[in-house]
Length: 179
Image 1 (cartoon, rainbow, N blue to C red):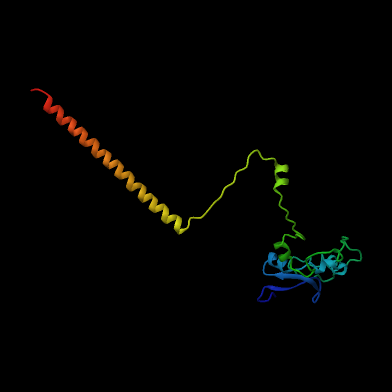
Image 2 (cartoon, rainbow, N blue to C red; image 1 turned 90 degrees about the vertical axis):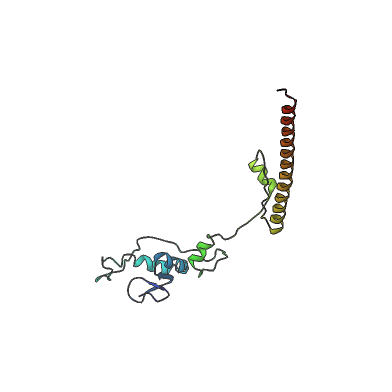
């Protein structure tokens, strides 16, 4: 039975045979993320997995009655090389390895010259995006208000002048015209 934290050691084969670093979780994905690669650094652990690979052959999951471990393993799998240098310890969780994308070293070197030499772009655009702060908003609103005020005064003044000149023109035509 899985504990309240949804994690217990993976058991394979007869009762009491546990594999180091391998975990059963509430979901297979959780078990995988909580497990480590410790077992895969040991040839005896890999042999144990291969020995009991077909241990559960019953459809109901019960242990077989007459199970005989094979004398010759069905596969030959070499353990992971413990002497290979790594920034990750061998007991780190697979979830952490997945989060780190299994990357040992990330080298970042920025060179605009190499970029332009490799890509040879035909043109280059530069865009500068700013967020409007309160001072910018206030000056924009005041500028808009001032601009509208001056614009409306100009339009109103000229419309009134045009109206007066048309009215004056119409009156002068009525007076001059003989009856």
